[in-house]
Image 1: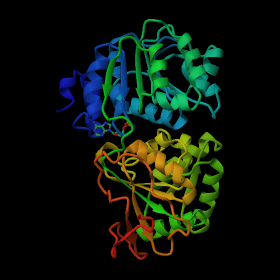
Image 2: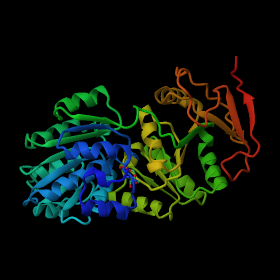
Image 3: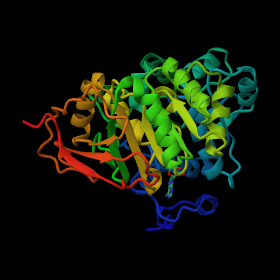
Image 4: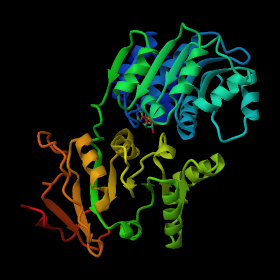
Length: 426
Ligand code: AMP
């Protein structure tokens, strides 16, 4: 199927063609007609499914037909949890709307507010915002919403995780009652449904991926390794495999800084991205990573939310996340838009519980591989996740089987692979 039957007009179809998209993704196929019909929509879609274009394209179509925004007004408000995601959506809006005479802007905290006030003075058709800064701007009368037609809540699950619920409720209270509401979330938990009840009216529900499953085109495995050996193992993998672009997750900001310093000391170009970094530093780190002048980006979960890096080949979990859903979000950074990716976790014995929770959530046992000289002295116990009824995904081996990878490999396929029974086999 092409984009033409979806009823989008020429300037938008041209922008899509310029971007090189020929076929709508499943979320786009469903969301575009639903949003164009004017209904409220609740969509369960993970990042990487093309959801941004899924809501941006029909919104542009709607805006192209109406009256332009007046001073201090916004016609569409897109709320996102992080600055990176806001910036990313802002870029998509500009790209898809480049042949339309619409104004859009992005506002978030961590940068000066005055230039944002100036941009809002004339009014904008599309405003992309993080909640805290938007409330500040609203309190300063830089923006009001009398002319608002559409509200988009993107990554609603993460908004709740990050404690934005009160800000969201305050913002909703300032909006006109008659409006179209679009809510996107990777998962639809009970809390999200509660939020949705006060937000969307008789919505069309769309779901393009089963809850909490991981992308099919991402190959996942773990290296059991002692905690103190993790940094050395990471350097070894980067050097041996000659990885050029690796996104590494750590649980804490301190851990991200420490690991970045270690990588740099080993001659590996790395940068950290987390909430304590200024927006300028985050933007610079991301740009350098995208252009491959930095090879490793070390990120915390919150900072990485919304990062969209074309064809990112490797995601490494240096630490496993405490919240198992974060594992799904993390590995969703790779294997986007149909490309293949690898998600590799370095797991130490003390992370057994996190590993079990993740395996239970994704309903698969992650393959274990060992590398010579990095075998753990503290074994990671086998997961007790009860998912034996689920068909294993690719790259799966029995949880009693492990794969050993010899040290001097420079391809992903181990040269001398030995299989052996786990010491714990009864
Ligand atoms: P998203 O899920 O919105 O973060 O989009 C993930 C990636 O898919 C982005 O890099 C988009 O540029 C890309 N993308 C979106 N729609 C399409 C499409 N129809 N065909 C190919 N790539 C797409």
